[in-house]
Image 1 (cartoon, rainbow, N blue to C red):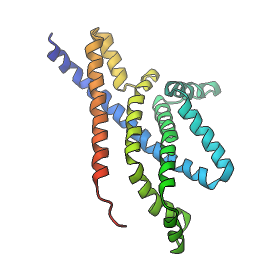
Image 2 (image 1 turned 180 degrees about the vertical axis):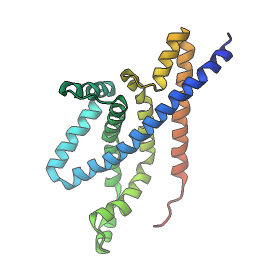
Image 3 (image 1 turned 180 degrees about the horizontal axis):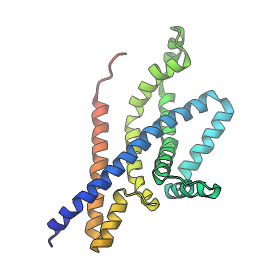
Image 4 (image 1 turned 45 degrees about the vertical axis):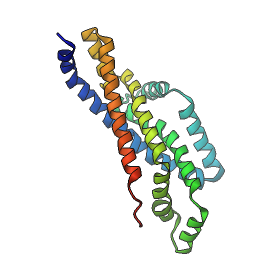
Length: 217
């Protein structure tokens, strides 16, 4: 069997694994963004206590390996008699890990907004939540979009470690194909190209969004 024929047999399982990786990563990134916004609000609205708690959270998830975080969350519930679904563990850890990085990215964006805009919004009678939703957040997303895209790509690549908890993502499919074909080099080359395809698509989408004009609200 030639390489072309073998490659054809790889396509279906690799496509299935790619969809799992893309779905898990997208869910984790979106949940991570929402959690990052909550972390920012906790840091700014809960005074010293909020800043300390958020600092501990961010330090833990930025300072420990993603693989260790996944194994901790997956096996820790079993110590109290609970069985955590691998999908929930994978999405939860990826989201919490991404939130730690995204919160720091968003923090820089919020600090870049001139204070005069906030004061003007307050003069017009907007409350803190309205200012956050309509004044700050849209600008922050625009200002930090390249960094957010980079973080999204990091999550996609980092998601390869979830294969250790029996989720049939792209990396686990690669391991299964290697076990049946005994051709690790060409299998993992195909896996690498699949990851490259996914991350390139995300980078392209990010560039497209960055070129969109800012419409007046």
